[in-house]
Image (cartoon, rainbow, N blue to C red; front, side, top):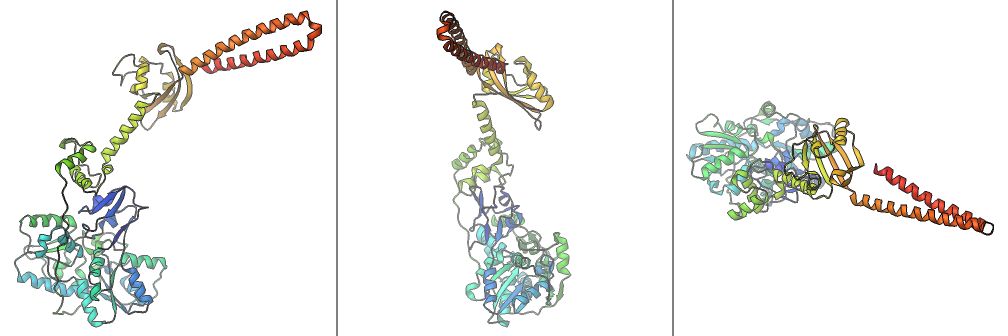
Amino acid sequence: MKDIIQTSEARCQDCYRCVRECALKSIALSHGQAKVLDDRCVLCGRCVKACPQNAKRIVDDSKLFFKALEQGEPVVVSVAPSIGCGLGGYTPEEVAGYLRGLGVVFTRQTAEGAVQVARTYHELFESTTDTVISSCCPAVVSLVEKHFPSLIKYLAPIESPMVTHARMLREEFPEAKIFFLGPCAAKIEEADNYKNTGLLSGALTFTSLYERMQNEHYEPSYRQALEGIIDGGLFPFSGGVLKAAKLSGLDNVVELSGLEPLIELFKHMESGGKGPRFVEAMACEGGCLMGPGVVTEEKNVWARREQIKGYLHKEASIQTDLPAKRQYKIRNIEEKMPSEEEIRAVLKKIGKNTPKDETNCGGCGYKSCREKAIAVCKGQAEIEMCVPYMKEKFRSFANLVVQSTPNGIIVVDQDLNIQDFNATAMSWFSKGRKYIKGLPLDEFIDPIDFKEVARTGEPIKNKRIIYNEYQITTEQTIIALPDYDLVVGILRDISDETRTEAELDMISQATLEKANKVIEENMRVAQEIAGLLGETTAETKATLWEVISLVKQRREKTQCDSR
């Protein structure tokens, strides 16, 4: 399968939203980047719609389409009936007019082919008592082929409305290139399967065409008639296939839209359970009108249904030689299941040592911790996707930093009750107690500075405090954390620095005493030989007094700082 759903690495940012939304978990995470697993993906496109960063996009055959037009080749477009919802404010007639202006020969309704498929579904229902699963949705076909191959026998052996309509158009326009325009990502792959037959040249999404119209700042200048087809035009919404096939209301027929209910039914059938007589199966919840390629101003599914119903006016002729029969193939890839030991090893890494530890919060995108662990073993998920694990890891890391720092960390609440002493603070102030949480801070140290910060919210920075009781001198910074109603003190032991300063003071004092002696000696000598050495004595005296003054200034500054 070609890379139809692509992810922008720049935009994809560790949110796991696509994993949560994907019913088949066909998205793998590597280094925080999501990538679609082509062998598992059925191209429902739900991840594209769900991505909050618009990191995923559908890559269709737009380049082939516009290249054909540029080269002057005849191009015919088969447009899906969900065009009845409009295209981002443009009416179906305005969209057809835009295509005509680009050089498209004809724009026709895919619903013409759907009418033929609906008739054949009714005939198939009457001719068999086995379960029949509709085959008009290519994502459902892929779901069966890739994930429930034992149910292939129940898929209606009938080509889809898109392919059936392409056969009709090929008869009418034998030389034209035929493109499908619709809301579906899976149709791009389906069209790709028919390119080598010359039946279809590609498929486009409403999204890509609308983006082109927006980039051109297109203002509708021409409108071309594009009437919706009665019955066939009902195919886009849930229940529409049954109604078009005249099966609606019959016993033991069901309509299922969305992958989850389909998976539930298929698992039941795969395990031997009996399925309904007829299953109208659509991968998009609500039907094609809620597909990933739909661009409409109306978000409500019921309003979209009404828009499409009001758009259906034209009858389509029946062609008994269509649709053609089709065959299916098994496309599932056998995945090796990890051993129980491997699964438990992953669970243990994220702190899930027993089943009771498995919270199954779903934050990673998987339904259970075990399911996520299996995905990790398969290389489809990362340990770091576990939100509780990462929170605990961060908490443990932060706690390790706090506990290993040589600084004392004291945390108190607004009432100055101790919430935490780190190991360093415990070694200084705990007085031998092992349990101090909740005790008043004043049982250990003077809390006056903590109290002031708690009252004002203003921090105290780099204040020197001597704790004589503990024989320690600290330089402390105290800050408030108002969002948490906490006050935090960070205390640095500067006792060694203080002792060094004291030693320097002693040296300074000794220097002063020696200087005084030198001065006195020089004064005595000066008196004896004043006449001879008058100038020299004066200079010596001035120099020594300057030394004494500098030493005294430094000593006074040190004593001031220590206060």
